[in-house]
Length: 113
Length: 116
Image 1 (spheres, rainbow over the protein chains, first blue to last red):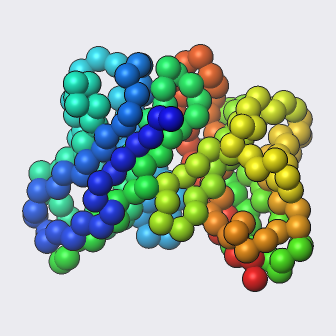
Image 2 (image 1 turned 45 degrees about the vertical axis):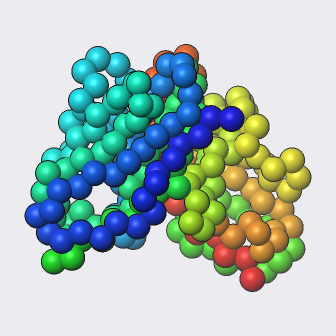
């Protein structure tokens, strides 16, 4: 069965540190890839998405992600994090343009001021 | 432009009672999806509905769970005779398109159900 793995369940960084959150999926066909963020007490928000084209995708708030098809990965990056980036980050995939989103377990990011 | 609305945000039920969760999609969206998130896990797909139609309920438990999206009004996820294992966050999402094309899903704030 298709699955999405986020290997880091908890990440703690200091402000201004660089961030990379891993996301790997298991499916060899066409995929659409998403990163969602959930700030404390708020709903899930779309950070960025990849459907096709340039594999380096830029999202909101300075985040970007790179789709590496050969590695089945879609890692999220930010060069310099801020305290306000403290949140839970979810990677999600849909396959063959199917509507079902398959989700990773999430990564809780804590930024120390 | 209101986003996806869900109510209630928090719901407490005793075992055996019924839980009704409501979701109003974004304006102009006719597709609704329900997901469940158990503690420390990612979201799991439950059901996909269009107005008056259940398109895919493959993620719904076979018993006690039902969903509808009537012509008028919000989508309802109903859980009958709740058990402690139903305690979870239930998220609703909507999109302007469904299967056959990439569709970005926009999420509501979720309903946290606690079964005592």
